[in-house]
Length: 401
Ligand code: GLA
Image (cartoon, rainbow, N blue to C red; front, side):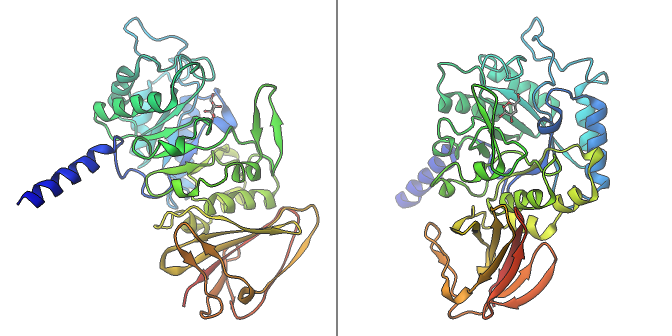
């Protein structure tokens, strides 16, 4: 009996150690966020149209279900009681009405705020109002909170994010908690009990691997972000994801670059939050964003973040272990010229040391599927040959026999 009491006590301690709402993001969250295209130029017409297109385009069907309003949804001041005020000009029918509309389409709704005194755009921040704001979000029935890190001089990141996480839990409405602290304080070291995802870098920029300077800070091309942090993949997994930032697919890069960006985000098990103007999306952009087999790699139940296997002569090979012993493997041409790939499976053993997994091309003959073209190729007995344009990618799924 004593043994069982001890066991119960132990289980209770483990359960109460986790502060966040558990189980809200068993696979990387998918959706749309207003920032990358619209910055603070948002209003109810845009959000309603976006919600409509998420459904009518088929994006919802393949998994994009969160609509997140980023910075700029508030009036510049709190009211006399210290409550946040949704901007009445941008949302003349009221924010609650808009949220109900989004919910009525079978979608979920997210908002943005900041741990500091003001948001990055200069709107009221949450510092000192954590519990009051959490009650407000619960009363609006939101499902997701992105919580940024501007104007936080002198405060401790772990404490600030823990406070907001406890405030959300206390308010009682299950809300995904997305920390956006740019990786400055290594959120992967303290994020798991308090948040469902956390940004690992500064802001993304729609380019392959450039650094775009804003003076005192920079935005980064998607390959720069993918390679920015070393040794953090073990911190990402179901319900606690490394967030490589919102997608820039459809925001001005070439088709090859968009395909590479999307494939890389899928291999990294990053949240897939589109950031383009859905109202002007080309069929090509929609095709990239809704590639079901790539999304299946991103949403794989193991939730393992992929990693770079090798890089030689301009070709980077990234891999991701999947359920049932399958693997995803992408060949990226990072160079400025066309390249030919000749990959001899048998001469390679891919090892994921953290998860103790490896390929066995010497013993097993995996079947090989070209994901983008939805075409079965041969198998891993044969050498894989392909030609890749500059900045293009080819992603294969290796199915274990
Ligand atoms: C920061 C975040 C962005 C966006 C803006 C809004 O830069 O990293 O993703 O939320 O703030 O001001």
